[in-house]
Amino acid sequence: MNAATDQELKEAMQSLDTLFNRDTAWKRINEPGRGSVFHSDTREIIFHKDARVADAIHEYAHVLDYARYGMRQAILEGGPHGATFIKILEEVASKFYGDSKMYPNWDDEYPHITGYAFGKGYIDTPITKTIMFTEWA
Image (cartoon, rainbow, N blue to C red; front, side):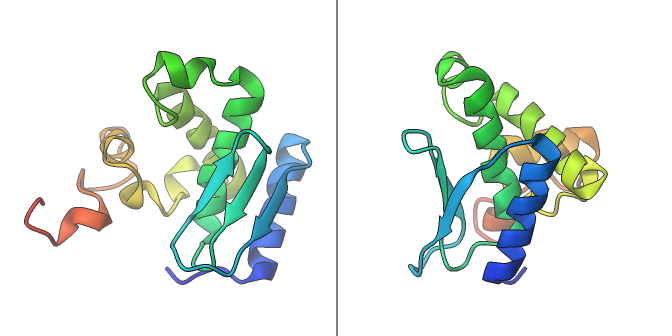
């Protein structure tokens, strides 16, 4: 997948905010690096120049997770990508794409999330794209 344009990210964020009745702060920075990050202290999503629309879905799940639970669930689950986050990611993907299976990053997520997606039948391999063609696959 190629990086999203600024307009594509803007439209994705507007759509997500409409779907979840929010007004989420975000910006794009012209720094290398694929992806994005949600800063809970500023409640802002930062997209790097190589970010894709699907990265907005992942970060928006963090926005909702934080809005609903603060840091409680992350602390209880040993990090910000635990079971609660995964359920919220499914919710965001389902509302955005119409079906959570359509989220294109299931096989490019953190390995345990990819394994979860494989178990749900969203993808046909439990191995992430990041390690698929390496010695660890």
